[in-house]
Image 1 (cartoon, one colour):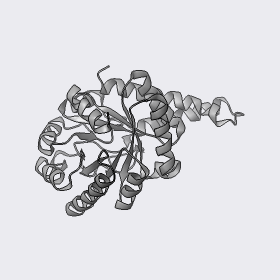
Image 2 (image 1 turned 180 degrees about the vertical axis):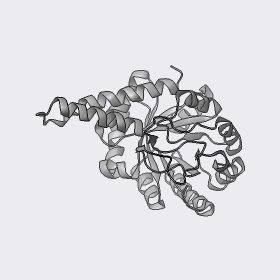
Image 3 (image 1 turned 60 degrees about the vertical axis):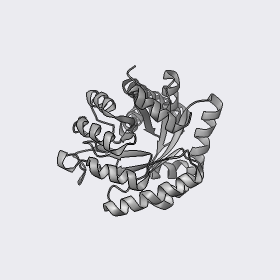
Length: 287
């Protein structure tokens, strides 16, 4: 099945596909290993910064090689792409999905550029999924002292159902990432704002396309479960993986100060990331 079919299947089963960002091959293997052991489809995400670090065509080749070697449903998403040129680059490289993030733009500009992205992508590959964003939720996957300035986490600023319906109708997007109380990054307190599950229900009904929850790190297990039941089909996690990577690497280097082989001192980080991914996948799939 292609990614669109797996998303529809997830929605039918009332589960969510895990989307995990990676910055290198240790992250890629950590995510794949966790999904493979649980026999679940998985989406690898790479932001503009992450794919610049790994290489746009290189990450496509890596994911494709895993898909072919293991005959496995692993898909690649060009996460948070802020320009049409970036969308075009990802589409041409062979990504399975791409997100045009115009959440900080004026509504009409967001709509226009998202529509342009959809037309280009679908003309190039009818199976590719294009995701649009409505509602600014911050931009950085990192530990935060406070809610990002301008992030729409309060009820009066959340994505409105009637606006979502117009946006989907006019752009032709396959997926919608709304602002429903979520935010990018993770508060150092460990507790992000609560998710508005009633708004998710309203948006799924009005938009008519599957919904994606961004900024998953720091959201409570209870909110995740409610969000999936309300209509979320894909959940993004990044900061939690980065935190596990960094903490394990720090301990590894402290415990082995003379070790210079990266594949040795990075191994604990891979294990730590795999543990985080596995726990999240179990939660998203009621396992």
